[in-house]
Length: 270
Image (cartoon, rainbow, N blue to C red; front, side):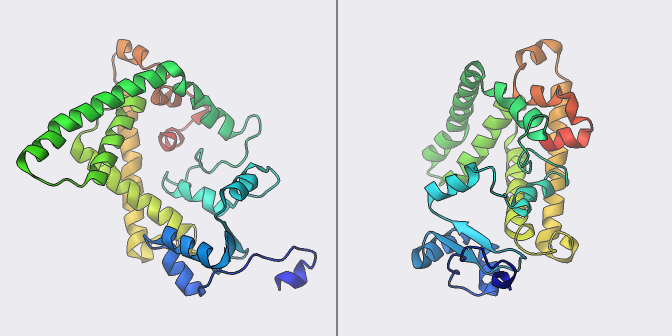
């Protein structure tokens, strides 16, 4: 049908060596990267996945080709992948789902406006905060575990410490360990379902209530938005002197951006 409707279209890349059901199962599992790597090894760095979508889903593994595709403004970016982030933010448009980069677009006033938060002076302050977070972790967690011979899951530990550092450096929020564990869990659940289920399985987001992962996603995304609101409220309640010290940080820029309008949009930005 594709060739009849578009006879002048170039030939499609080779199909991945899997059925549609096998592909959906692999792409919605924790082993999706291994699956794509195995496909590339068998059929080449550019191939199409048999997915229940109206248009062919082309996968590009070759970095140079991927960059050429993304850098070309005439190439249509797949909205269903970009918009998947919106389900994490209460179905509000985010800087990650914005595909329009023209003057006056949300990408310009929301994303570009945060660039000054990465000025060298702020980056230096972030480096100091990062060092303090990791020093505190070594003193409070690593050293006692080593002294007592207790094993640590280093990947989990570094993720938790990184989340604590980001909240401190960018949002001025001191995140307790139990709170960091909850944020990490909810982030993993929300992103996994958004990009591995909602973005790839038709109508799954509409019928989120019908399956366990969809319901877990709804709970996790609501908790993340509540956490964003909590960080905003904590920032707004700071004394004026402390707020002045945080001028130019991410949360100060987002909170002071009048174009967000509603609290929902600002919370999604955070």
